[in-house]
Length: 503
Ligand code: NAD
View 1 (cartoon, protein in one colour):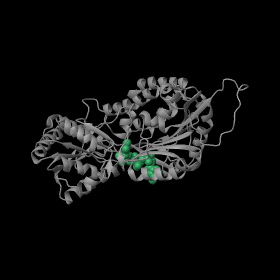
View 2 (cartoon, rainbow, N blue to C red; view 1 turned 30 degrees about the vertical axis):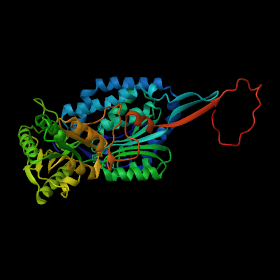
View 3 (tube, rainbow, N blue to C red; view 1 turned 180 degrees about the horizontal axis):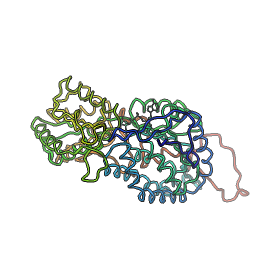
View 4 (cartoon, helix red, strand yellow; view 1 turned 90 degrees about the vertical axis):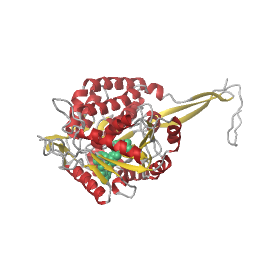
């Protein structure tokens, strides 16, 4: 059986930890590979390689770094089919969705190609008579990225293209559930001309992560995953003096106003709730319908769409499926437990995905699209992130109640409203407590040149990923104030003991 190793200092590095995790194809339920769970010492070796490579890489001109990013972008495009197949086989998502995640990652690479412009800093002439100020946006050093299973390509690419382009070196710790992509990206970066040691991959679990959080050579930690782990990462990394951005879980609501285009909204909600089997941090898992009439119409439309959905493996010869399996047997069991709790706590289960069997893939981890109506805020299926293809419809009498529901929820990642009324939409975007807002847009994931991040317990740390925040996160600002006397010989300078002010 193939063993996925580490990528340290420009080569595949064999782990001697003797600890492994199985990697499955979720559509068949078969173990296809195993991945090493690196020791603390092996993680420290990766950090040492990145630390060693930093001085030369930081001095490499931004233009040269950008040119490597341009080559990396071209290689990503040339390898899209191969990479998408790896994603689909290890994660389970359908092929076109895997291509979609690669595209969203590629867009961050494109953004990073503009780094000579983005890292220019600021300049003010004559802040005082004959005095100028300019800022330097300098790289931090070794940066670490710890990433979740649900976007094995896109989430690492939210981080390392900007970290590398700004002159940092990087250690990636991918999810142990679908680790192959991290290694494939490392090889493509090398092919693009990235010097050895600038990008390293350490596969592993908590043992490796804890080294990344505590080793004094690591300057910054980017994390994406579940909220309890995000909180642990943020508090531990911060306690060790590191910069940290830690993105956590979500429970994204949309509001359906009575004036919404319900056909459009129902179509949009289907893709946002059930795409990638609901395993997206921006999945819409709660539809809040304003008024019973709106709810009845929405539910009828959703049921029709769900009946027509094709669920099966992510890669097929014929017409593509709409939805693949979930990541693991344990995760499938957890989702089914949530569905059972919804029934026990009194929600109306309109479509039950628990007993789905896909012909020829009976051992796969499939859960069919599941629809609950009459869900209320006390229920576990409302409060917790299920991370599966389960959509809850909540009925409320008016817009204000819907808004308060969203604002009271523990999470505040993304949200959306469906309405034809511009004033309601505008008010919603101002008043809602969430980081990313869609106005008739179900999954408002910002483009690479904006920043991605939630509010409340969906994020820990002040700077979001990519866009300007990403550039700020991976650079340290230094402001230089300079005066060049007309002639040192001609001027007499007295010492000044008061706080300097400019005139
Ligand atoms: P996870 O938190 O289980 O794992 C994420 C990473 O943390 C993995 O690399 C894992 O190896 C590591 N990890 C797990 N337990 C650890 C521990 N005890 N100590 C140290 N490291 C540990 O998350 P997941 O199941 O891979 O991903 C799903 C979660 O990620 C969902 O909650 C989803 O909402 C969230 N997510 C959030 C965003 C966002 O942008 N906010 C994006 C994608 C996914």
